[in-house]
Amino acid sequence: TQSYLKSIEGAGALNAFVHHTPEIAMDQAKAADARIKAGDAPDMCGIPLGIKDLFCTKGVASQAASGILEGFKPEYESTVTTQLFDAGSVMLGKLNMDEFAMGSSNETSVYGNAVNPWKVDAELTPGGSSGGSAAAVAADLCLGATGTDTGGSIRQPAAFTGTTGIKPTYGRVSRWGVVAFASSLDQAGPMTKDVRDSAIMLEAMCGHDPKDSTSADLAVPNFEAALTDDIRGKVIGIPREYHMDGMPEEIEKLWKDGTAMLKDAGAEIRDISLPHTKYALPAYYVIAPAEASSNLARYDGVRFGHRAKLDAGDGITEMYEKTRAEGFGPEVQRRVMVGTYVLSAGFYDAYYNRARKVRALIKQDFDKVYASGVDAILTPATPSSAFALGAMKNADPIQMYLNDVFTVTVNLAGLPGIAVPAGLDKNGLPLGLQLIGRPWEEGDLLNVAYALE
Ligand code: GLN
Image (cartoon, rainbow, N blue to C red; front, side):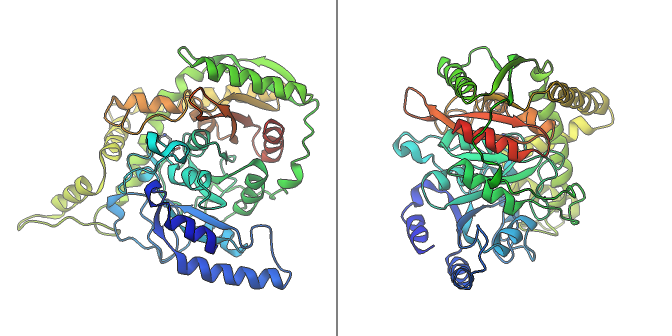
């Protein structure tokens, strides 16, 4: 813990940690030492972690990287962090992210973006929204980090930084105490150096939680024990529709190499079709903002964080308007407006309802493929490697949204998905592959990823 705290102090330029908690870390580390000495130490005991700013941590700033939550220190601890701390893990601090987890580059953060540690001088994005988590793990500022994934926010930053991250099946990890973005899509998961660490950390994060009505009442398997490296006879689907126009050749090549690796390990490779894939991105960018506009209605200047200074004669409406205009950044405002629009009486059927139908079709695509005997699906994690900070920030927002083209289907269908490092591009930057698993079979999924690692 001391050595990680020291590394963090020297890594300010990465802007990965946005709130530092060295006292808490040292107290937790001492308690962990005592447990280890007493022989009562779970695997996560004494492991120094970074916690994404989206998780409510009791008495510690938890701002979701937003100006509107300025000064907010929750009275309660999220279920995920409670479980990790109960297992003896150590919190080094809170990690940078896109504001309310909306973004793919970490540039919507009120703290300014984190930097990709692979080539600091090149000023590349670490990805988003869990960009601080990915940067911190890649730069050895912590052994693991919590992330959250609504449309790819664990897997895309993992791919951009050569780290591993898994989004579990929807309902596997409690959302209680995690600031909500799009509640039907949000899931938390671990970001780590490798698959084994992800298996161990995920197990500590999972479990039924009566405080989250969508939490599944299922036993948590021993995910590490699932890592047998034996994938003989497993059927791996390669979805045609993920060959996108304009995708760099080196990504096609890594995808082929990954396929060959799994085949060599004894898996059967099968060409599959997920015909509704092309509608996933537009459906996601209707559903996610719709849910966000509703979830973010609570930030009204009364209950949490920031409240605008008012002029004489201002009433409650002006208080709401000024507070929200000052507190939310431009991307969050865009989502709130889009979300409100697609939910409005005149457009609900045309947009929101239609997107929900598309979502059901996307889920059916996966159901059919799994029913035909496929065990896991292999795809690229992202359509490019880490891009330059600033390159897309002020461009057409749809350019930024295209980053999520391979990942959003997984959230829409509620499936588990993992990104693993797959190699480097011609500039020496990491690229990742994504594996998508059957619902609730994270163990199997981790094992296929382990064979690919
Ligand atoms: N980049 C996507 C978005 O901006 C996904 C974000 C996430 O998974 N939290 O919505």
